[in-house]
Image (cartoon, rainbow, N blue to C red):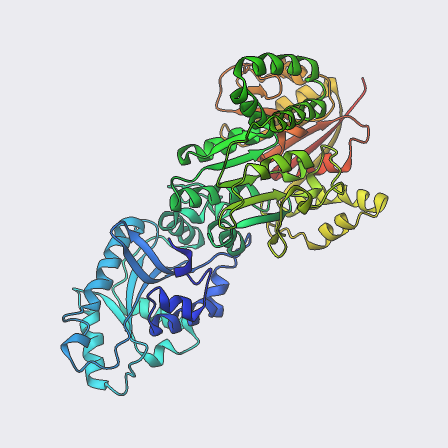
Length: 575
């Protein structure tokens, strides 16, 4: 869908007129989009979503509905006709132009697509015809619309211009023979999810309780789908604000509009790269970790020589990742000085940008087309900078990124329940008190936690007590529960495999660091990550295991913010 056609992005009258909107559509659209009742419907506990959609293509042959209005009770199709009278055959809605047939067709299509989720009915609106002026003819128009062949309602100018759309919509629904069906906010969102694929990060055929968490709010929707937002852009977002979701959907949008364009997505750690790759597999976009991208370039330059060099480098520097990355970057600079070239990309999107050093961003920017119509997007959260990069060592312009006026802040954490989020934030308050960090103070002032509730459990355990506790904890969970174990500075997480003797024979636990095989196949798949490798990932329940020493406030923050519903913070004490 061209976002210029939708009021969610642009309400410029001249622009809308140029792309085919009529005056009646513009006037009614403004009233719908600004109506307090319809805005309140979109204010869910978790986020504010768009409930009025314009020019939505509901079938491949360019069947565009003037307006779709979503409510928890029904979905309303509104077809607008700018007639000034009903005195000719051309303006009678049941004759040559047949507005009734057109609206009825749209309702039928939608009943086939989303009728199992929520009831649907149609309205034909005449914003320039006063019912009183054409009293008898207006009555005939309404009677014909309500006839069984159409089963539609009609609005005239006096109804279009009122402010109480709640009463108007519900009275209109009562006037037609509205089919019975399931209702509710979740049903409304599920119907939206089916009709507007790009509204959510993944498609879901069932109306599950967690579906609202996958829906974009208005700010996220504009960032991920407005193709006019190009050039160099910086996106700051708190943990759980949807940065990765925006990258995924922006890439899908780019490839839909520009199938031949070359798109590169880069992140820091391997588990996040795997997730991004799975989500973007069908798009043809290239997805790399930073070091994976460097390796691919070096191997392309000189496959034999570079393979031997990389093997030696990995074995020598496996324990020193910073040295390893620096060596790769130096090798790239050496090749560039010899006249070698980097691959060219039209669009480059970077996730977890706070972990990237100056040289890395410089190389990525050199690989970008440089065209202001193409996108170079860096998403970051400075509070998750746990790789000890010096955030003050360079400005964006130092690496060729020019984004004045193109910096966006996402302030709402949709991932964590409020108790989990506040617990994570409490770890950063120590950092604020200790360092007086201005950026931390700003972060603490702007963050929002719309999802209320959650659970925080803190434990102090010995190694010997840890295993039976985990056994009891995990065995009590249903087979399909979403869980994750995160550790920091505990010796070889393989020791966690000791839980088998405590009754976890039917649980599959993966060591995501050493890539060990699972104990046994099972529906309960519990990954174990270091804090560093957990970045960008999430689960309903996170078990965070760490030593009693001060492991760093930002490391605490990263681990805790992986939990959507519940964090279990376990401090290990010496035996």
